[in-house]
Image 1 (cartoon, rainbow, N blue to C red):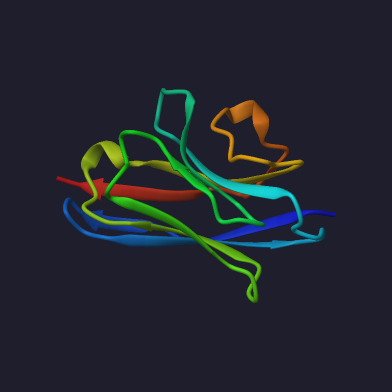
Image 2: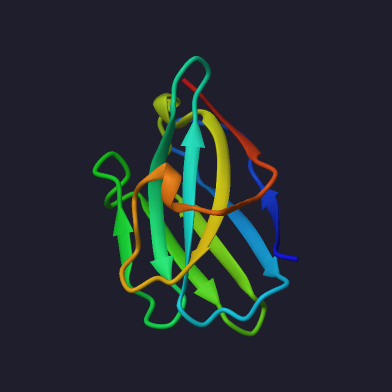
Length: 125
C-alpha cells in the first residue's frame, strides 16, 4: 500500500522560507513521479511542482519559478519542497502526490493517484 506522509509547513512572515517533506513508502520508485499541489481557501487545487524519480526532471508552475525548489533523496525515499521568498498568496494547504508510469512530470491534478495528508502553509504580510 502506497503511503505518503508529509511534514513541515507552518506560519512564516512574507519573504521567509519553509521546507516541506514527503516520505513515500509501499512501492518501488521506478517510473514514478512526485508532485506538490496546493489548495487555497475557496479555490481549486493547483499544481506547484513535480519531479520524476528516475531522472530528476522537474517542472514548476510559473507562479513559483525561481522561488520554490523540488528535490528528492533516494536513500530517504523523500521528496522536498523548499519554498523561499514566500508571499501571502502562497498561503494554502500543500499536498504531495504520486503516480506511476511517468516519462515526464505531469501538472494536472487528475494525473496523481496517491496523496499525502496535506500541510498548512500560512504566510503573513
